[in-house]
Image (cartoon, rainbow, N blue to C red; front, side, top):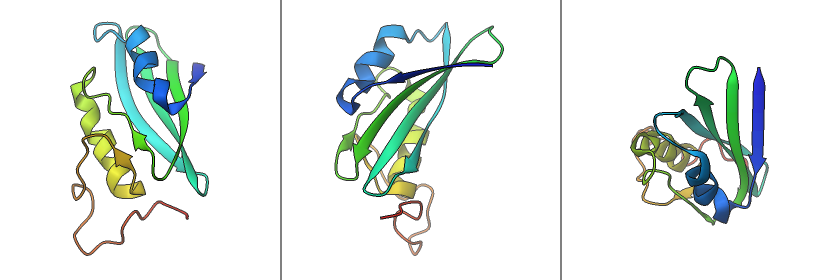
Length: 114
C-alpha cells in the first residue's frame, strides 16, 4: 500500500486539492479529524481509480475556532463528512450545519478532548 501525505497550512487545503483532483481520476473517501487537545489534525483521503491501495492524504491542523474550508465546490459529496466534523468535533466547517449525526439532547462535540 502506498500512502502519499501532503502537509499544508489550513488556508491551502482547497487549493492543494484543486491542483490534483479530477473526478474521473480520483475518488474522495472522507475527511476525518484527530483531537490533539486545543487543536485538531484533519486528513482528507483520496484514492486513484484503478490503482489498488494507493492513497493521497491532504493533512492540515486547525485550532477549534478556525473555519475549516469546504470542498463541496469541487466535490459535492464532501458535505456529509464535513457535517460530521461539525457535529462530532464542534468544528466550524464552512457551510456545514449541525444536528445531522447527533440527537438534540446529545452532548455537544462528543469527540472533542478539550
